[in-house]
Length: 211
Ligand SMILES: CCCCCCCCCCCCCC(=O)SCCNC(=O)CCNC(=O)[C@H](O)C(C)(C)COP(=O)(O)OP(=O)(O)OC[C@H]1O[C@@H](n2cnc3c(N)ncnc32)[C@H](O)[C@@H]1OP(=O)(O)O
Image (tube, rainbow, N blue to C red; front, side, top):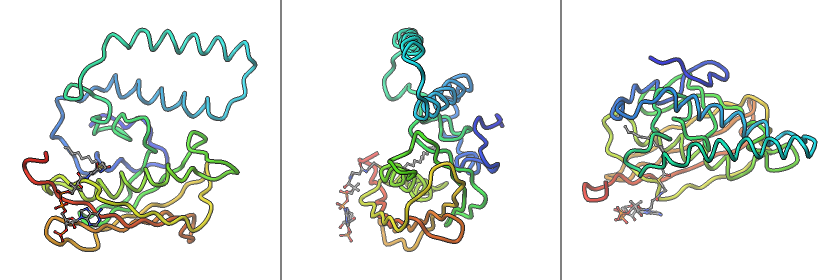
């Protein structure tokens, strides 16, 4: 197994835990490294106030990087971003990295730290980033090994308390009921003992013609 690039807090990404290997033909450790470097840039830029000269220089450098990569644009079937199942966040630079501690097929418990990239304001994580975390975590539980592919039909998120950035939080998701194609999954995000956000999602298993 390739070592995960972003082992924040130890543990492993859920995909590594699940040993998803359906798309190993898209494994690209060098690309996963590129995505990890971009995540670092996102994080550093979000929290930085550099002098204007340095901002200009950095913008030129990043522009050059984009120019270098642009000719390698591919369609979705060939894309490797989001398919690096042996790496944290699958090489999808939008996703916060979740380190999984336990998973039993029905429930997952893990940890996540939202960095400055995910700041809304006033030290609080952006609500959209919390919803993103839940959609992905609950969605992965819905799409467990051997389960039919499922899509989010709805995701109801409650924000009970400010979710702090830069602090390790625990996150949890578990299947409540399965009724035919409908999978109801609940999630919680906790700061210590306190539940800062919770979610309830409906995931609908897809028919063959919807895949
Ligand atoms: C190896 C690879 C593995 C990779 C895994 C990576 C993990 C990735 C993790 C990332 C995960 C990220 C995941 C994402 O972000 S997925 C992206 C966000 N979601 C979407 O784009 C979904 C868009 N919507 C649809 O495609 C359809 O609406 C679906 C497929 C959901 C249902 O349309 P479909 O035509 O198929 O079914 P139906 O309409 O007959 O409904 C069926 C049943 O469901 C009930 N229902 C439906 N909607 C609602 C609703 N809103 N509230 C309450 N109930 C609702 C409905 O009443 C009925 O119930 P019943 O009457 O039978 O009792």
